Length: 187
Image 1 (tube, helix red, strand yellow):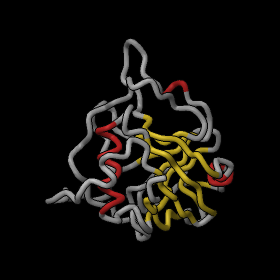
Image 2 (tube, rainbow, N blue to C red):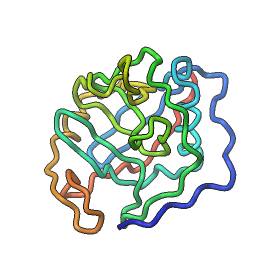
Image 3 (spheres, helix red, strand yellow):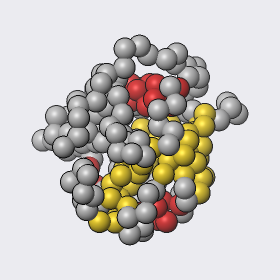
Image 4 (cartoon, rainbow, N blue to C red):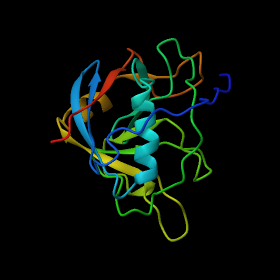
């Protein structure tokens, strides 16, 4: 099994702190897309995500979990499958009115609703089961793809299988890489 990741000791400076809708270019091994984050609806989650963008630790990572018509998940592993270090967990903001619909980005988490660290996913379908309800927490949506959302269909359709080293299912057979995330200038 994988080793427990270490926790970062310090935090980088906040990116574009006065911009409520920062835009990021995701450069992947299959193409590029632009994502607009929503700091108004998910301020803690956006701040958490941007910490990892600022320190560059999302660059050269795997999309390690891909389920067609469901999610494309990444942000947690290096090319050699080392689990990356994390900051503290972020408070769940799933009741913010944003839903897990096609083209949105949300935080992955464990069963504890406040356990999101660094892994994120793109919804490659409308996933109502991931939204909050009166009796359960949901998964925090914090942005959406605003340019080239069609790329999600390409990413979600890659061939997957079990991964011997990690024991994970639904791992792309051919590595599906997040080459880098670029913070775009304020418009």
